[in-house]
Amino acid sequence: MKILVVAMLITIVQASPPTPRKAPDNQTASSQSVTQDADGKQAPPSQSPSTLHIVKPAPDKRDGQDVASDNTSKAIRVVELPSVSVTRDRIDCITLVFSAALLVVGSIGVRAAYRTLSAIEKQTVELARSVTETAKAATATRDSADALVNSERPWVTATIRKREYETAEIGRDHQPTGRKLVAATFDFFIKNLGRTPAEILAIRGAPELIDSGKGPAGGLTTDSIPDYGNAMLQQVWLLAPNEERRYDVDGLYLKGWGEKEHEAIGHGTRLVLFKGQVVYRDTLRPKVEHETRFCYTYFRMTDDFRPSGPSQYTTYT
Image 1 (cartoon, one colour):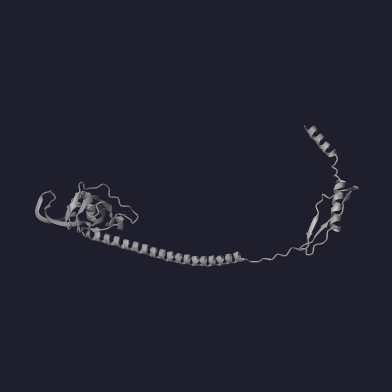
Image 2 (cartoon, rainbow, N blue to C red; image 1 turned 90 degrees about the vertical axis):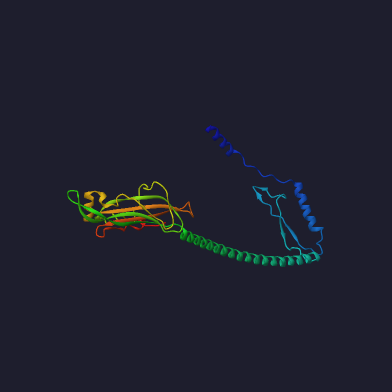
């Protein structure tokens, strides 16, 4: 295959270059006759708009042969362009009039469109202002309705109340001594302070003993999440306006904790903490649930329960 390619290259190199053809004599003669006739017989025009000069290039001789022929392109030079005169007629005048009329009409249309856009812009601004005012009015109406509902809805409170009573003194032999003593116990109450009935759904929470070193709130912080456990109330209560109801809670009776715990409470080394939650709903918005969170701590020095705990443990919704 390589030998065949080399042979073809050698053949192409040895091929003789092509020789340019010579134009026939008759064509040259006819071209010269036309040129002579143009120079001798034709008279110049009286008013010629332009003059054409035909320039015949000199023959190019290469290797003793005349390469140039009459087939070679001739250069033409224009000395003067013809004069052109434009005369406007009636159609041109009518066209100018209509063009001016269209320009006036277009200017009026652009001005009218600008006025229309300005009016639309003003209407958009007014519409936006109207929407803002409507939103403000709707917000005010909603706030007014909420205020009206809040003034009529139930508000449930949860409190611990001290109750004193007389009891017989018990001696060391566990027999009555015949003397009377004043003892105290604590009761848990819920009350509806609203103008409409409240449907009590759940009461959660239970008293617990805490170390006094942790503070009156038992170490509860503002970051802690309340956890009240399971509901103590097993049925639904309907609490009328201004109605108060006592709910029995184990643990509020201090002597019920036992002898050692009662002694620690008496010495102030242990505290009783009672935090809880009351869940209810009203008749105005039955689907909305409200809650009352409470937190109380028993202090031996005052011999009573006092509100305690962070704000998330003492809220009303």
